[in-house]
Length: 117
Image (tube, rainbow, N blue to C red):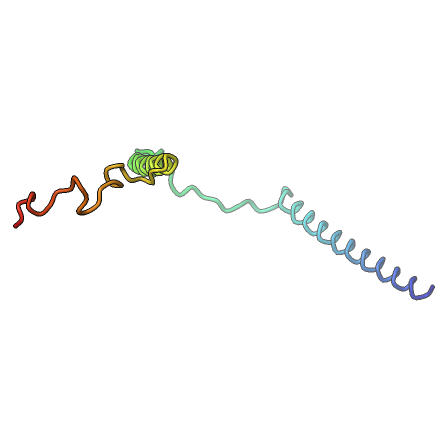
């Protein structure tokens, strides 16, 4: 049983050391706070350099940046809606005329009709 007692004693010593260090840390912080709040403590060295004035124009949000962002968002959203609509209808974004047209197919314009020789 001697070995188990030694292990327990070391664990208790470590806990006591940790608690002691924590208590000393808290006491140091308390002393520092008490020194700041004491009547004989030196006041902070603060000076007014210039008086504050409200800005002449709003600093945020900028109107042109907001308009630009809204325009870009609208373009992206409309392109997404158009792509989703085309994918959903099965057309894949191509019109029926573009799908059916083939060079040399009936109904296409030949070289002689275009004014060629």
